[in-house]
Image (cartoon, rainbow, N blue to C red; front, side):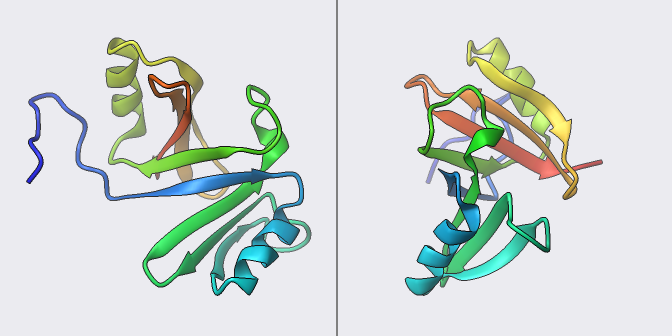
Length: 130
């Protein structure tokens, strides 16, 4: 059982890796050949910028690489859904975490921000947009 610290952000509802790729559709198709099924896709038609994939209980996503100017080509982000992105970003900032991208609403209905963990990894934070 994990301890919950006073003032800590709410428990995580779900987390998954986000693979960065220049060819999102081709990369998603690779994982479909491994048994993953494509779910949410943005935009719905044409070459996607983002594809969510699932195989049994395992989730991953593929996102356009050039959307993140602060990182080299390729790589992996961890994306964590939280209850309130702004509050979590404020708490992490107060604890010294660098904020890469301030919270903003996306066209697909989520509020998203990016921070760096102590090892320098990008961590995306998301919640439903208000």
